[in-house]
Image 1 (cartoon, rainbow, N blue to C red):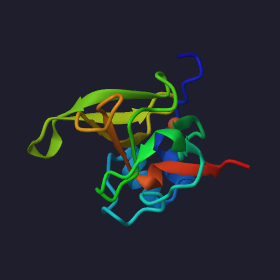
Image 2 (cartoon, rainbow, N blue to C red; image 1 turned 135 degrees about the horizontal axis):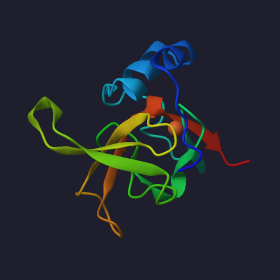
Image 3 (cartoon, rainbow, N blue to C red; image 1 turned 135 degrees about the vertical axis):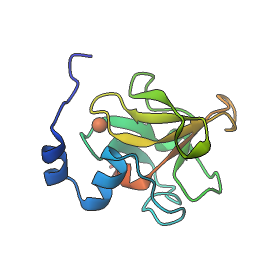
Image 4 (tube, protein in one colour; image 1 turned 120 degrees about the horizontal axis):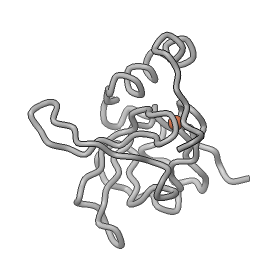
Length: 132
Ligand code: FE
């Protein structure tokens, strides 16, 4: 993609909060029920906290009961990208921003219709933009 964003580790560290840096750039995970958006039901768009790209929509958000914001699909097919994550003794599918590579969370095959997918995303990876 031509609009991909590449920054050095020092640049990311300088512009993100320590918690954002830990999750977005070091594949961290926020504790369940601790983030800003797991219970958010307002209408709006969820933007990448790293680069502002539109990643998810309230239209696809559902209450997964997990304590993390959960979506059954991204805002657009190419908004996010995935890779296999074999850390912590599990095989999971990692989800990151297609534009800046920031880690967002994981996607699991136990979501609701119509996709059956559950994008389990850290609140700290997102910035909510309420509909005006
Ligand atoms: Fe991004």
